[in-house]
Image (spheres, rainbow, N blue to C red):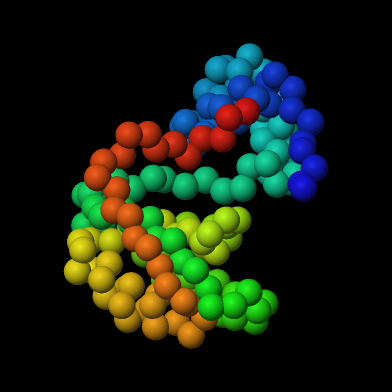
Length: 156
């Protein structure tokens, strides 16, 4: 388990605002949390150094860039051999359409979140990639009908 960083109320406000508006200026952020710009900057640098703040990104609307099909793919491995798992994880990392991959407990070994253009696009990845990987025994795919809730913000 990772040790948690000791956050005070201002740190929590900073994190909450930055998760919602990563492009906010230091001056506007300082005003919003009731701190001086210099203090706010030092806090941000400390949060970055501690690994609490990892990176700043801009989120893209997948529908508007032709990636409107969200698929959750459960994968079962043939064996739990560490080399086979590493090879599969490298395979996953090499495919940009796989946005997330989790090693799981329970009946399935991995859960992938895949974002593709359409069913044909997913079928190519599944049939020519995932299911042909030497470490994969089988998979089960679940197509998202709509997004009810989507958040990138971690509760602080």
